[in-house]
Length: 448
Image (cartoon, rainbow, N blue to C red; front, side, top):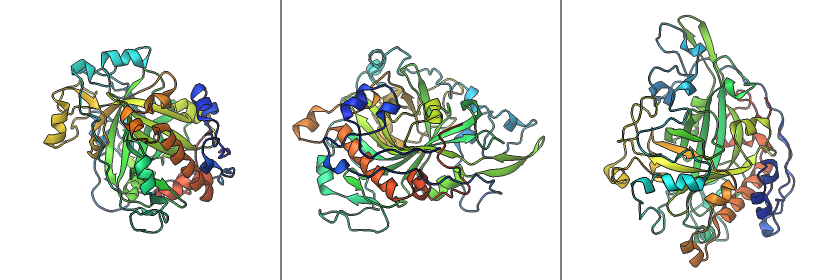
C-alpha cells in the first residue's frame, strides 16, 4: 500500500551518509525556504487491472525490443513457433539481459567504481579519453510545452502544463546537468501473471524519460505531452546495485507520444497454437521522480530522486530502486561487434557526425543526443555507495560561474514535483501524468 511522506526533507548530508533507502526518503528544507510544504497523503486505492481486448488501431508501431531479439518470445503477442514459447517467456536467460561480456572493453565487474574507472573510465581510458565530451555549454533540446513563469521572461504560456520557463533557473542550472526531467519505472508480469509476487515473475522492466528544458521548473498540474518521450527497456528486470552489476539497456521507443507508450504498456490478449488464448497483463508503475544525466568530467551518470511512492517498500527494494541513486553509464558503438545475444540485431542508426564521435572505440560517455535514436544501447553500472553524490560532483567551470550544485538543482526539482503530486492525486498522479487509466493499470505497487 502507498504510504505518506512529509515534504519537509532531511538534510542533504544526512541523506547522503545513510546507505539505507528508507533514510534517504526526505530532503532538507533547512537550506531551502522553498522546501516548505504539507504532508502528502496516499492516493486512493486503484482498481485491479483488467484485460484489454485486442489492440487499438492506428499507425504501424515500431518493433519492440523483444520482437527484435533473435529466437525469443515476446510478451506483446505470439510468434509463429512450433511450441508455446510464451509459457517460457524468459528473455532474461540470454547473455544480453544478464549483462553479458562484449568484445569491447566495458566497465569491469570490480569491487569499486574506482577500479572500474581504471579499466575503462566510462568507456574512455581503455581506448584514450575523449577530450571534448564536456567542453562548453551543452546543447539542450527545447520543449515547446512550457508556460511563462509570470515573474520572469520566458516562453509564452501554452496552458494546461506544469512545466514553466524560468530565466533565473536557466542561469543557475549547472552545465554538468546534460539533461533533466521526470522519470517513471514500470514492470510487467509474465504472461498470465497479473500481479507478480516475486522478481522471477516479472517479464520486463521499463524506464520512461520525459525530458524538460534546461531552465524549466515545475508548477501545479499534470505534465503536457510534448511527444518527446523515451521508453527504455531493461531486459535484466532489475537495476544494478553494485559495481559488479553491468546491465544493458535499450531505447525501445524515442520521441513518442504518451498514447504510444500507453499502447505498449497496456494489457492484451492473443492466440497461440498450443495453449489457445493467452493474456499479457498491463505494466504496473513502481516509481516516479526526477532524473538528470550528469557529467563528472570523463564520466556520465543517470541520477534520480524518487517522489513516489512515499516510502520505499519491498517491491522497490527487490528491483533495486532506492529513494535516490545513480548509475555509471556508457553508450555502445553500434558498429562494433558483440557476442550473439549481447546486442540487438540492428543497432541505432546514428548520423555520421555522431558516429564519428566514437572514434572507432566500442564505448563513449552517454549523452542525451545518443538517446534520440531507436535501438540505442547503453550499459548502466551500479555504485557501491553514495550513488547520488558520485553523480553530482560540482564541476570547476560551474563553480567559477556561481552555478548551483547539480544535487541542489535535482533536489529543488524533486521538491517541486512533490508539491505537484500532492495537488494532484498523490501516488496515483502517475496515471494523470501519463494519460493512463487506473481501471486498467494497477496502482503504485509497493508490496508483492
